[in-house]
Amino acid sequence: MGFTDEHLIPLVDQGLGNSAYLVDLGNGSALAVDASRDLRTLRAAAERRGLTVAFAADTHLHADFLSGAVQLGHDAAATVLASAAGHRTFPHVALAEGDEVDLGGLTLRALATPGHTDEHLSFLLLDGAVELGVFTGGSLIVDSAARTDLLGPERTEELARAQYRSLRRLATLPDHLPVWPTHGAGSFCAAPPGAARTTTIGAQKQSNPLLAAPTEDAFVAELLAGLGTYPVYFTRLAERNRTGPRVLSGPPLLPLLDAARIKQLLADGGHVVDVRPAVEFAAGHIPKALSIPLRDQFATWLGWLLPDTAPLAFVTGAGQDLNELVWQAYKIGYERLAGHLDGGMRAWRDAQGPVTATTLVTADQTGSRPYLDVRQYAEFTAGHVPGAAHIELGDLAGLAAEAPHGALVACGRGERAMTAASILERAGRTDLAVLSGGPADYARAHGRPLVDGTEAAHS
Image (cartoon, rainbow, N blue to C red; front, side, top):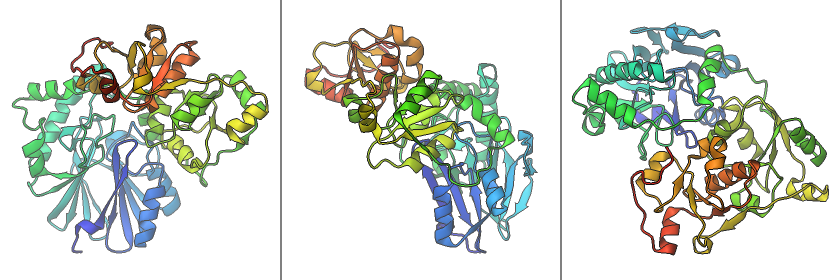
């Protein structure tokens, strides 16, 4: 069919750090690879090209998002392609090593590449005998390989050794061959930072430190050393993807709630999530509300910090996109969305609802407060304020008592720090302030150069 780069459309989810792919098969139909449940971008791309999604392939049982394959099967009668070893319970073509699927001119060949998960497949795209590229999912990714600890610590090393063999196998493909991974920079599936989302086999032989490891043991040590924490919702979604997400009959909606309904929801054990920018939350918010600003990373922190079993109500600000809020929640399996506060904080105040504020300061206003850094471990060790205490945001609810009294709570810019402050406030800590900015701003204002390493880090 004369396949070119224009036939492959990467669809990047910046928040989760993942790429899905839409492949124009040249006959009015398309292949979707690792599509998320939030299909808005994929559908828009298909509509622009006049394409119908005929095939939806998943490289593995995703832990970080719900697959959109079942929905595509329902809406477009797409044929779902996935690993036989995944034992999915919904209709699909179950593939194993070497199986091939005719896409209507092009061919998709399954390559067993376990490691990130037991049942992981890579998909080699061919035009006749010509290899066009390989979808590697969470196996070979740009300058790394995806994490192997999602099935528990007792399986981590075993899967790391499987990942070693999978990467070595992929490295035997031609050097010129494009590599189209799913996980990329920003993914908690252990992708390193960097702008590149795709690569080639030859480039990875030159730049991927895991492929440069001289032995299997060295590979395992290198891979495991790079594993940080990951959102707790990751432990739930693989099974949800095995049974298949609920098919949606239309876009999910977010009803309007009055102040009385919000108060009742809180009394009944629900949660209020304030998605306004951090500066607006600081100026005044509902007591016990959790601040998670609506941005690309909203889903990650929603899934890390709150259960999916309790009803959630939201406080939004002017001009915020409710569709974005809902889809970010739904793509990670959060469907108990009670609604959002009708009229926002103005309506809450008009209803005589209690309001609390959080102190927000710039780097030159911090005084002598002890510094609490809530960034990820790798960020902290790369450079932090001397003497800073360190508790990752995802761990903070369980370690609130260890936060320094009168702390200056800080992250990279301020959003996660405000989330952290709201967690501490829910635990009764009201003596804190939030830094608007990050460690570099603090260092400049106080004349204290940043240090690296683990000095003063909470382990």
